[in-house]
Each structure stands twice: as structure tokens, then as C-alpha cells.
Image: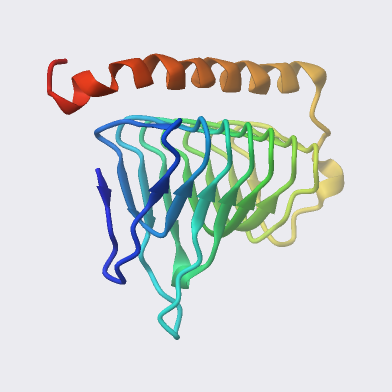
Length: 191
């Protein structure tokens, strides 16, 4: 469902992208080329700052936002997702937040008030809260990174982890093409 927010901002979705009919895209959201938005994702840019302004939730080309992901922002702060990035099932991305390009965010992970650099891999059930990750870091499953976490203990991304991230992006890019072919069936409730 594509809908405007109380400020009247309407999402901008590139026609080459696929948004599942069960997803909710609300407000000042920009979805760029060949993005896959999975079932029951909620991307909502409706909360304003003290002056009534909202920065966009901006999802880069060829990225995928999988089933049940929630994106929102505190006080109208920006959320930016780079290109060729995967946000896996039921993850939460809460702004202010910037996620670089070629990043993998695992199932149930939570990002808030942070920047995740290009090429990072954040595995399942991890939390990044109030701490920026430089390019190329690997966060194992169930790790919590906060403002005082010593990043020297966080390893760099391995070739195997990078290959996994790239395979997820490739699969979801193929979904964009496949589901776009079925889009009229969804609209006409034939499936």
C-alpha cells in the first residue's frame, strides 16, 4: 500500500522496482531503480522535527528490503540505504541511520542512530545503537555494538561473507524481474 503521510508527502517509487502489495510505504520515501520490497515490510516517513520537517527514507538502487522489515525515523531524521544492500527479514532500521552500499543486515537485527559503512555484514539478531561502523566490518550474530564498543575487536569482512551478501542481492534482483511480470495479476486479484 502506497500512501501519503499527514504532511501530504507521497512516496516516490521507481517504476522498475517491485513493492509487494502487502507492504506499507508511507510518506517521504524514495525507492530507486530495481529495488525489491518484500511482503509486510513497513517503510514509514511521517514523524516530523520541531519545525515540521521530514527528511526522506531513501533506498538505493538494486537493494532489497525483505519480509517484515520496519523502517522509521525519530523526529524526521534521514534514513539512507545504499545500492546493492540487503536488509533481511524482520530487521529494524530506525533513523537517524545511514547504511552504505553492498551491506548485508541480518534477520531481526536492529540499527538505530548509526552509520554502517560500505561492504559491512551485520549478521542475525545483532544491534548497532549509537555507534558508526567503518567500511568492511563483520558483526557476528547476536552481538550488541553501542557507543563505547571497542571496534578493534570487530573483524573485517571475509571473502566468504562478501560472496554470501552478493548472492542475496542477486537472488532478490531476480525477484524484482519475476514479480514485476506478475504485478498485473496482483492488481487484478488473480493470484
